[in-house]
Image (cartoon, rainbow, N blue to C red):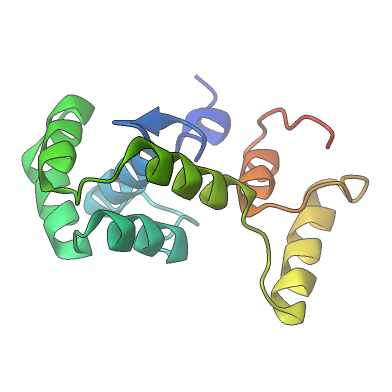
Amino acid sequence: MDLRKDFPRSMRVKMEGYVHLARMIDKCRAVLAGTEGEYIYPCPMDDRLMKFSGITDKEFTATVKAHPTDKGVAQWFKKAATPHPQAELHEWNEMMLTRGPSTPDKQKYFNKLRDAVDPSRTDLTAWSDLQDLEEGRTVPKR
C-alpha cells in the first residue's frame, strides 16, 4: 500500500452517504496514535462535516477511540448525525467536493500548494482535487 496515496483516504470516499467521513476517521485515528504528520484534525473540512451532521469533535474523537473499526464508527455516526433528506445530503456532498478558495488570499495559498506539486494543473479549482493531487491520486483534467 502506498501510504501517501491511500492514507488518509480521499475526501471523495463515501461512508454512510457522506463524503469526507472516511478521511476524517483516518485523520482522527492518526492524531490519537500520534502519527498525523502534516495532517490536521479537526480541520475546517472536518468542522463542516461535524456542523452539518450535528456532532462535536469531542464526541467524534471519543467514538473513534472506542471503536477500532470503520463499521463501528459509521454505525455510531449514522445514529448520532442529524438526519437529512437524500437531496440535501447530495447537495452538501457536491458543495464539499467542489468548494474552492473563498478569498483572494486563500486563492494565492491554493495556487502555491498546487504549483508545488504540478503548476500545469491550473484547471484545478477545488480543495478536494488539490488534496488528491498532493497525495498522488489521479485527478482528471477539468
